[in-house]
Length: 343
Ligand code: TXA
Ligand code: MG
Image (tube, rainbow, N blue to C red):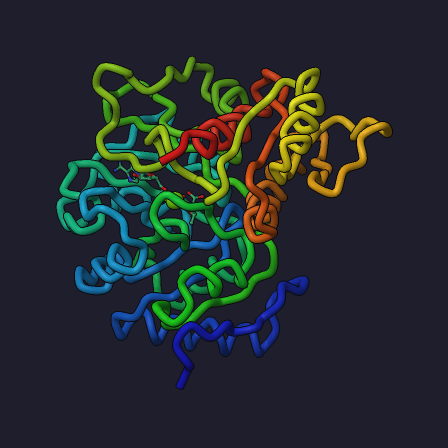
């Protein structure tokens, strides 16, 4: 028996040992019984249910507090299973799957008839991805090739995605039947989502793989989502999402410290997520610097954890420095913008 909300403390070692396998088998048993299990991926932790079990899938929505018509990604174990879930797979989509899976890429394709409305939010499309994490892949193998894991990020609707098992426990606790701990997520931001539903590739969400790398691979331009007919009900596409509880502002590097100081002088407690070093003249008990990595991939890996820490430390305001306007920074810039829009 597993205590609800308990963390199965497998720590990521090179390869999986017998303890890991035992826990993965236990997770697979729970999933087959209709339970909800949180599991690590390379991007963020997912909250998974057997994609063929409508009651289990509905529980995910209840636990997250997510609107029932927002679709979930189905995680599968290999690109060769694409046709089991999607009825039409354009050549470019297949190419991306073969090149980037396992990895932080989600493809939106026309669904096969058996894919549940509970998973797709009633849409005729399905989101598919092969996660690049040994525990997630082992879990999928334990479930068997005909099974998929329907899983959104394991956070409450609108909040920051979890990048550590403890984040899931803190936020969802006993609502989850089991939390598999695979250590901190390597990518730290969600997958890049490309839709092929209209035939041509469209970017629904920037993420773990820069769009430029995908375009280069297929020799096609990937257009932004159609603003007049946005892809329906993609929650990560809502203006306010991925949000900390503390109000967050984005400032250009030149103005960042000046503004932070002005707030601190008004006795507003401020956390600064800076890319540039804190000027030595500034030293104020009302202000704390969270120095951020200057490489996009490193920044992405620690962003959510840093936002959680700053949130928990009780600051009145979070100030972030605007990232460079470059393709590699696009996912970070996107998440900061959505985090900055207040409810
Ligand atoms: O990295 C990730 O993608 C993580 C890990 C756990 O795989 N998952 C994740 O799931 O971020 P979620 O549900 O938090 O975000 C997935 C986004 C949502 O905005 C959802 O609406 C959209 O993908 N989505 C899923 N299926 C879709 C579909 N058929 N059409 C349009 N959008 C879809
Ligand atoms: Mg999410």
